[in-house]
Amino acid sequence: MSYLEPGSGRPRGTLHQSVYDEVILGIQSGEWKRYEKLPSVRAMAERMQVNRLTVHKAYQRLAEEGIVQARYKSGYYVSSEPAPRPGSRFLDDPPWEYQAKPVRAPRSRLFEIHRKKVAYKMSEALIDPALLPNAFLSGHVKEVFDLHPKVLSTYSSVSGDEELREEMSRYFTEKYGLSLSADELLVTTGSQQAIDLISRSLVQAGDRVLIERPTYSPAIDVFLRQNVRLLPVEITPEGYDLDRIEYLMRTEKPQLFYMNPTFQNPTGYTVPASQRKQLLELAERYKCILVEDDVYRDIYFEDPPPPPLFYYDTEGYAIYICSFSKFVAPGLRISLLAARPALMDSIIAVKALADNGTPLLTQKIFQHYFFSARLQEHVAKLRIALELRKDRMERILAGTGFRWASPGGGLNLWINLPEEVPVDLLLERCLEQSVAFVPGEICDPLGEMKSWIRLSYSYISEAEMEEGLRRLIAIAEEMKGGITFPRTDLN
Image (cartoon, rainbow, N blue to C red; front, side):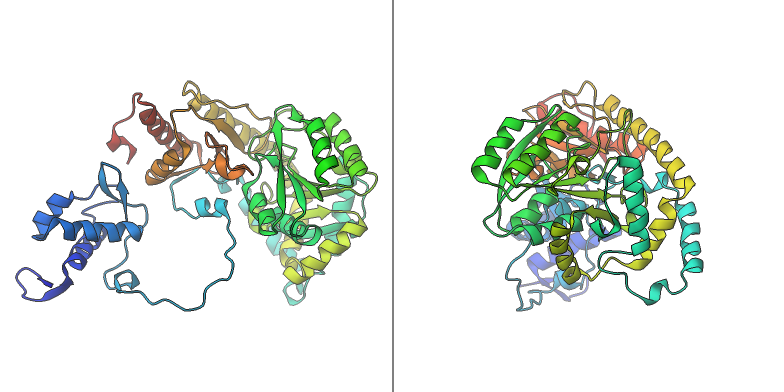
């Protein structure tokens, strides 16, 4: 059956297709803006002079394609994504499908959240670009091309630029007391690549891997992809339960222990120096490699943190990942992996297969930029700016019933929500209101931390933070049955 366009006598396709097109055109013309409610099924049926079941079918199709969102007992609302143009592939019936399919689809749950287009992104543990000296970096880029005119005409070595590794080995020795040579350093494209290289070179299917609970979500996904068995180790404001770790090392014989002991992501906790020494003793006794992911070391608000575990290592059981992407220049994606020769040889072999070396241009830019006096001054100012944002977030959240331990550094608050606020529904409602955060469940190797969330205070401006938190709090209060802001104020 066809629907005749009023006044034209021309068919516009199937009845439900005509309703579908009407909604698309209405969204594009601004009749219904993002997050606004569409006419009820009854009202749209009267408007289009069709059966209610036809409207329901069209609305369901729009919801399946993500153009609108169905809310239980509330109706249909325009989603945050722009509507497709009539005639685009979304209107093809059926769309073309290629026959080739992946045999195995890897998953990154954090990426699935980051890919959402929202205005108030408190899910991103990055630093606001406005806080970084972009013009100063631009000058260094020009200087690199003057000093190295052929920098784009050659590859870096697989290990990384030798000049950079020499300077970084001296830097680690002078600043942290680490004793290592340039050959014991590997330049990686961000810390996540370092984790991936370790997972593919040092563990295999069936191995045991100790991992913090909670921890950096992509690390869980990376290790699970290797089909290993994860053994969770609780981290608290006081550190680890070392008796529990020793028991697991003795009975399960794990190949390695992935950890983030300094301003930990997501909790912000820092493991004390005394435990770091004991961890190395346990690692040596039970032949377990300790992998320290150290991305927030320089972002402290009061006292500097304890030395890395690598400082206490005498037998080669520590691997150290130090990232500078957060506060130097995220776009450069430069990290350093330190390991003794026996382990490094295996890791470099996988790096060669992965990309044959991190791009030389980004290494040279990083080198000239990182060792400038201006950058070192900037880091001190950056700490102050980030602490102010952390304090602002904590003041706004005070009195909500949310609970957290105030971190001494890093970029995140790890928050325990009241029992009456289901995090999965809160995230769904927040995304509808253009607010994103990280649910604690994806940071838990057991997938059980369903009342926790991670909020990052570093990426959005203070004004955006205030509005994003206002929306989040209003939705949480509504779930608790408390006082909430009028719905129109949230749009």
